[in-house]
Length: 83
Image 1 (cartoon, rainbow, N blue to C red):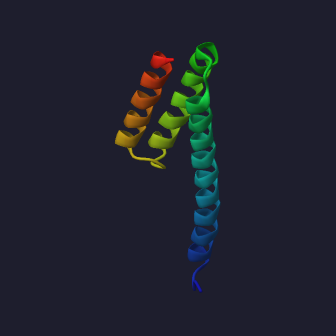
Image 2: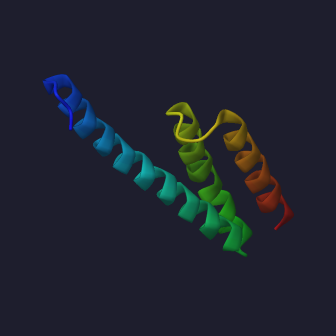
Image 3: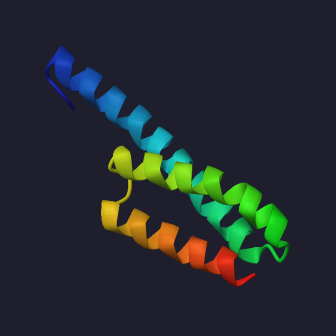
């Protein structure tokens, strides 16, 4: 158990940030999964900018690595173009 007030606060804030990061990461993964399952090109083209924005935000907040974000965006763009 922590001995200082600041350490207790750090524990609380770390847990809140962990849950927020987990939620955002899971939401983005589900959106990517839905996009990959989509057969309709128009719908995929409509959703692609939103999903790319989600991925960029995850990379900006260091939830995922920048290179992983780039790979995901590239993969999704190629997928949508191939529909």
